[in-house]
Image 1 (tube, rainbow, N blue to C red):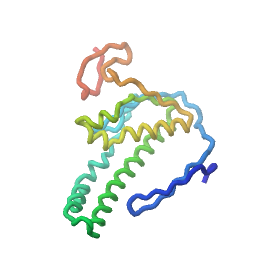
Image 2: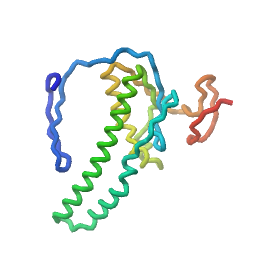
Image 3: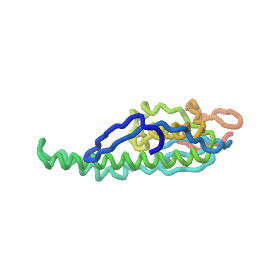
Image 4: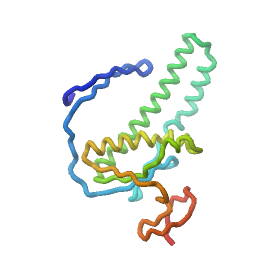
Length: 195
């Protein structure tokens, strides 16, 4: 293990036990990069779109496992409370949820690492994720895991000596980046053509 151990936490998730060490290490910044990029987060079909036009497909881990999860939850609801079969069914549901969460976290780490390694400045909208997670697109927002991704991106960037800038999301899809003209259009129209 690297660095000086500060704390150790024992954690249990279902039948799995983990020990988490927090260590103090000197930051290892990446070589400076003058490249900057803007990212726009989405739910379907793209997780994010960069200002260079690169699109990262949304993996939709929850949506893919939804049928299996629903079946496991139905089986759980049929079991008698306090029985051993109910305990097994509960563990099965928890295992499916844990798998989905782990897949999502792994995806976020990989995408954030790619961005941090390549760009010196990363700009994104300062979205109110909590409010969006209570709107009609809540399921997609939760499946995408924007808040977790932005937190991972921020700490990876800080560790690498990169800069992450939050931008006010008002009118970002309606303002021309060249002349500043504002074209009122619905939010689902993603391509901007300045008149």
